[in-house]
Structure formats: structure tokens, C-alpha cells
Length: 369
Ligand SMILES: Cc1ncc(COP(=O)(O)O)c(C=O)c1O
Image (cartoon, rainbow, N blue to C red; front, side):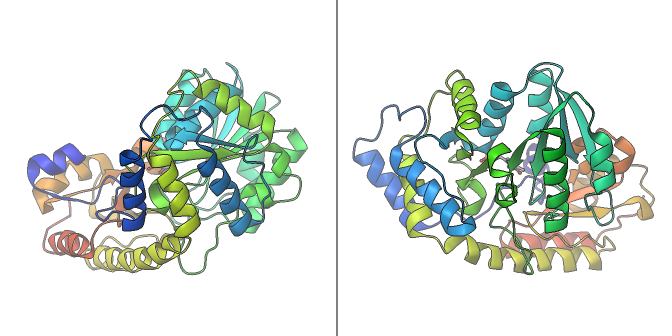
């Protein structure tokens, strides 16, 4: 869809990357590291300064106590953390309960490890987690839950009650939970992100994944991490050894500086992003595409069935020509094609001027089939 946006000169409200970079002081720290000879392999688990900064971050925000040497591993973005977690922990045939719609790398990696995915669908229009559906997805072959909150693409931030339902099921069935928290700081309207690892009994069975990409607007740096009990973290490290081994030597100390010295950046970013969310949601509503207002992340979702489209894929393919805008058909994130057939994902992590241009184009176009 990004290629289509370039080819057609459309406003790209599809792919989720910000138009503005993160803090200049962090870029300066990366330059300093590049010039200062930090250009050879970093240690496999990550540079100590970053592992320590991640441990401090988890303590400062969530009260979690982690040993930086045995409970933190640095990865090539959260994407590698997901891959290494699944490769390191899941055996072929294991069932993994996973929230649907999925972040796309989950499906690919679950297929690569030979896992059986057991979806629990967050259903339109409110995209809440139904504890009964969660329970029904668990069988005697289930070993893991793969969670994502704040959730891409729906923008749902799981509530304490929803997280408690996950914890109850995990404790009852002796499951390990792998939780992708890349949007941990990008929540709105007071919807606070609560890491599953903070719930009673869950620190022992939760592998938490995150990265600097979203929190600090450095999506291209691909510096992420996994934290949790030593046994789970060492499984990630064992798989990662044969994926990248290590990456981003000069970027790792810079991200350590971000976490330690720019602790307020993500909060400021979230406040700013909330305004851009409002801009997009108001513009979509004006164009006849009333969205579900997201509680977090970069994305809002709308339904296009009432405009006469048989599916959102056809709508998104027609959109560049109709309106000069690109968006993503959400059905690509579903196994249950019916649940996602008419849904479109729109990104608001763009400059306000880009969003304004996009929604103006939508309002001026005929979007009916
Ligand atoms: C839910 C989710 N997990 C993981 C990632 C990838 O994170 P990273 O860029 O740190 O690899 C993304 C990026 O879009 C995401 O939305």
C-alpha cells in the first residue's frame, strides 16, 4: 500500500510510521557512538547500558524488578523479539492463543515454528476481549498466549478486568504469556497501559516485549527488548543467537540515553498523537466514515459496508483513484475473514498537515460503491 501511495501520489494513511523523528539528543547520542568507535558487534544479550536502562524503565513505570544480566535481552526491534520468543519457546503442534486481528508478523512466525494458532477475536464495533471466547480457545494442547496491548490494529487498550481474565486462564492452564507492548506509552484519554507481568502470579510466566520504535519515534532503528523470568529470556537469547546474533551497536547506547534522559518524551508524544487522532477521527466522521475512537496506538478503524462495498480490500484498492488516499484493509489481519471484511485501518501517526490533506480529499470524494 505504501508503494501504491508513491505510485499514485496519494496521501499515505496506511503504513504506521511517524513523519517526525524522535528526540535530537538521542540522535546526537547515536552520532557520538558512531564517531566514538561503537561500530563492532555488541554483546549478544545487548550492551549492558541498555539492558540496565530497560530494567530501570520497567521499574520506574511499572514497579517491576529485573536483573539486567539475566532478565533483559536486546533484540532487533520487537519483531525479532516476537520471532525469537516463538522460535525459542514453541514446539511444532503447540497451540498458541492469539488476539485477532493479528499484527502480521505473528501469523508468519507461528507458521514458521509449526504452531497452531487459536484466535480470540476482538469484534467490531468496540473490539473488546470476551473472556468466554478466551476460555473457549484454550484446549489441553494450548501452551502459550500471544497478547498485544495496546492493540494494533484495533486501538484497544486491555482493561484491568480483561487482563485479569488472561491471567486467570494462564494460571489455571499453566500457560506462558508472550506480550507485545510496543505501544505501551501511546495511550489516550487516561487509558493507562498495564503490563500483564504486574498482575499477581504473572511475572513468573510472562515474557514482555517492547521496543524504542514507537515510544521514541525511531521505527527505523529497530532496537527492541524482551524481559521476564531468566528461563524465558534465555530461550529468546538462544534463538536470537542464530537470527541476527546482535545488531545496532551504536544505536543501543543511544536508546539507553533515551530511556534514562528523555523519560518524558513518550508522554508528550502521546498527548500530541491524541490531537492527531482527534483530527483524523473528526475528518473521517465528516467523510461519512465514523471510526471507533482508539484508546491507544497509531491507528483508527472504520467500517465501509454502509457505503455499499462488498469488502474493504476493494474499497482500499479504489481509494487512491477515488480520493488520492491510501489506507489498509483490516481483513489481512484476520483468519475470520467475515469479522474483518468491511474494516479499514487508518494511521494518524502523521503530520497534522498530512492528515488534514488526507481527510479533506476524503470529504471531497464520492466514497460510495
Ligand atoms: C503490535 C506491533 N508489534 C511489533 C511491531 C514491530 O516493532 P519493531 O519495529 O520494534 O520491530 C509493530 C510495528 O508496527 C507493531 O505494531
